[in-house]
Structures are given as C-alpha cells and as structure tokens.
Amino acid sequence: MAAQEHTSDQYTPKKENKFSFGLWTVGNRGRDPFGDFVRPELDPVYSVKKLSELGAWGVSLHDNDLVPFDATPQERDRIVRDFKQALSDYGMVVPMATTNLFFHPAFKDGAFTSNDPKVRAFALQKTMRAIDLGAELGAKVYVFWGGREGADAEASKDPVTAIKRMRDALNFLSAYSIDQGYNLRFALEPKPNEPRSDIYFPTVGHMLAFIYTLDHPDMVGLNPEVAHEHMAGLNFVHAVAQAIEAGKLFHIDLNDQKGPRFDQDLRFGSENIKSMFFLIRLLEHSGYDGAHHFDAHALRTEDEQGVWDFALGCMRTYNMLKAKVQRFDADPEVQQLLQAINSSDGTYEPLLSGGYSRESARQLKEARFDIAALAQRGLGYERLDQLTIEHILGVR
Image (tube, rainbow, N blue to C red; front, side, top):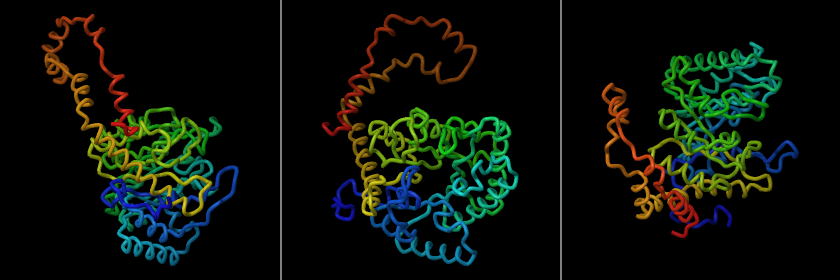
C-alpha cells in the first residue's frame, strides 16, 4: 500500500510523537560503493512538505544538505529564507543541526583531529558557520559525528594528540556558542568504524568519559545511534540507559542494523524487533522528551514513492512497538512476575542504599546468609522472556 493511501489508525504518526528525519535520510539517492545513484535529488522544501504530510514533526540537517558547499552569501540567504518559509508553511521545526566534516576531500584525514593545522582551522570555520545556521533555524541540539576523526595507518597519528585536538575543538566551539548566546546543547555521536578503519571515541562509554574532560561538560551530551553500537557488537539499550542515567541523552538516532557489519541505516524496527521493543520501553519509562530522530534511508531498490513508504514505516513501527510496550506493562502476569523477581523482606535495602558507614560495614560482615536457598531460587526469567515474545508477536 502506498504511503499516501494509508488509512488513519492508532499507529498513524502525529506531531506530538516528535518524529524527525534528516534531510540526508529521505534525500539519500541510493548510491553505494558498488553502484551509482538510483533516485533523483529531492529539494529540501519538498522534503519538508512531504514529511509534514506523513505526520513528522521535525527535520534535521547538515549544513550542506541545505546550502551547497560553494554557495555565495546571496545564494545562502535565499535558500535559508525559502526553507524557513517552508518550515512555517508546513508546521515543521528543526530540532537538530550538524556539520558535514567528512565528505569534502579536504577532510580525508579528519577535521578536528587532522594532522594539518590548516584543515583543523577550516573545520572550525565551517562549523561556526554551520552553528550559526542551526541557531537561525531554531535548532536546540547540535550534533558532532567524527566521521573521519580516526586512523587507517596507525603510525600516522598519535592517538593521545588526536584526543587533545578533539577536546580543543569542542572547547572552542562551546565557548563560541556561549559567546553568541545560542543556548545550544552539543551531542556527541560515537561510531566504531567506517569510513575510517578505526574512529576515535567508538562507543557511548568512550564519549561519556570524554565529556567530563571538557571545559563545559554540562552543555555536552550524547547522540547514540542504534546501528553504531550494534556495529561494535554491543547492546544499544544498555548504552542508552547509561546515557539516560548520566543525564546525557540529548538526542537519539533511530534505525536498524544486521549485526557488526558496515553501517546499514535500515528502516527502524526492520531487523532487531526485540531490542527496539526494549529501547522504546526505556525511552518511554525514562520520560525522554527530545526528538525521535530517524537516521536511516530507503533501500537502493526504491524509487521516490519507496522513500516515503520507508519514512512512514519508521514512524508506524515506533508507534506499534510503543503500543506493545504499553500492553506488556499492563499485563497482570508480567507485573506479577516482575513483583516476584524483585521481592524482598526489606532487611538489606537500608544497608545497600545508605552508603558506607562503619556500622553498615559491621552489620554486613556479621550477616548470616542462607547461601543454599539463594542458589536454589528460580527466577522465572524464561516465562518472563516468553511473555515478551508473545506480546511482540501480538498473541497477548
């Protein structure tokens, strides 16, 4: 069924869902390392219109997704003016912006971590101008993905120096944003590899540790992506949970991925349904209120209509899994199992949650435990996991 023919139901996307897409996602033309473009370019204004009609709330962009790399100042102002008018006409927002620091050949050895100080200076210039653009369009979050901030020949860079260069760049840009009064939050996006053999700060944990070494850690958080953590063979739900617990989930990129391969950016929920079920459960339980941003693209097999089928599919799948989460949480058998799993007589909670004291240490050292009973207790996880599957498959 074509996207525009889809009848309205409880899963139909609405503005209040805060779904957003990058211009580069619906604008992906299907090119890959082995084949040329299969779809025509989409005008950004047209993309705003179509996404709004499908129920999306926002659109994000790299600087050059909207303004060509070699545009004159006059061309830039005209393009931005027309784009802002489209946002107003179709009730759309720009929740996030970022900079393309990976496409142009000048960035072949990185941007902020390049060995060439001229490249590093140009990267700062380009990013300041892109931050200006994002602020002008109303963005609240600015994402940094270090697409080529890495190494192919390990001897080419001192990794300690590279980390320092990245810190210097983010400190500079944080101070610039503050000085301009933009009130932006920066979100760092980790990825383990591609297009470089190895990219610095490859996972959420690496980025989280790095944030606390910056001059303005309060304004810097994370933009984790499903595919990127899966490329490293990691549990994305756990990575997002760590970001949430630290108060650092500023933005999130939703897509899907077939294991630790190249970055596939598949339609959200098209592969790892169980993982995405628990991701949505985590986001909904945590009260996350930011953009639900889809950083994915239609398969190379698709024409333009397939692009809009893809976009609608991402949003509908999120809403379908959200409904299944709600039914799972409301299931009396699930609640009974969870209550049993987490049951306690209350004896040890004060000692475990009250922090260290000499008295608590004494009591714990003198406590007597029935180790045999602890070892023999069944936890009911098989039944709980089966209930999860039955809810996901729609038989409960």
